[in-house]
Image (tube, rainbow, N blue to C red; front, side, top):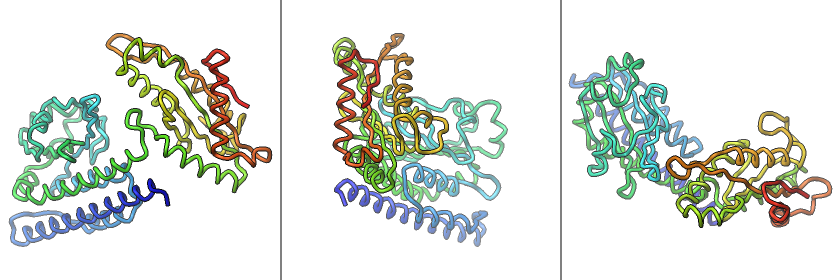
Length: 393
């Protein structure tokens, strides 16, 4: 097993342990609420599914997306009352944009909010920059005015209060959960804030581990896969190709005249261009395909089970036409785009693309390295022939 795979396995185990602790804390909360209900100090509608759902989640395949669902459902369960469900939204922090971005919700989706994203300096989030602790606020009008569309206010008839729960890792707020809840739940959680803090500490650790796992295979600037992960995945696809006699294609994509762009507009604008080109590529390939940053201004795309002029699978949507059609489509998509690099100023780009193909029976000898070398050779040819074109064997 490779060092990368061992690291990811270790991170996954760490996430599992953190989620197990989450379960234990939820059991404590459950017992506390049962005790309160027995003595009449708190009436809660506690269902067996509350624990079953957590147990099922712990035995599931863990990914960042799955983890975010576990987190938001955990908070949703904890903050509901016996008379009313809570509404929760989870925002992740993008420090490049100084923005909190809506990611997932519990009884709440993005169409209910005034806007999907909030600035970190907006109220009520601004206070989290100094006080990275759970914040309780009980001004219903503030909740309504800040977060919700007027047409959705009827859904807040049982909501009187709110919580801001920061997800903090190494003193950085990685995200914020906003929970809108009934007064009874609000008062209960204020009394049990030490348990809520313990829960959020474990949630933050789990999220931090998931993000670190993601960073291990992602390019930090463009958020597509990095070179190391590309090499590993392509090796797997070539082995799969040899076993099942399926074709596999590789695209090498290079931004034309990128050095000149960097020299003219600066490296910060160059970074924006790299991010936007990565976004265009990623949004125009199949789920089974892989986009990676190969190095500098060069990207690589792996197209499993895809020949030069047709896919071996049923041809639907983005699969039509094979590697050549896909490369031409991506080239045209970049050429059509107008990328805003400064306020009020947009730039148009072109890319050159080289294709490498492993097909059967004539390509049975082709290795991963040979496939990369062929795609790179075809890219060089595209550059030599005038750029903004696709070349293939």
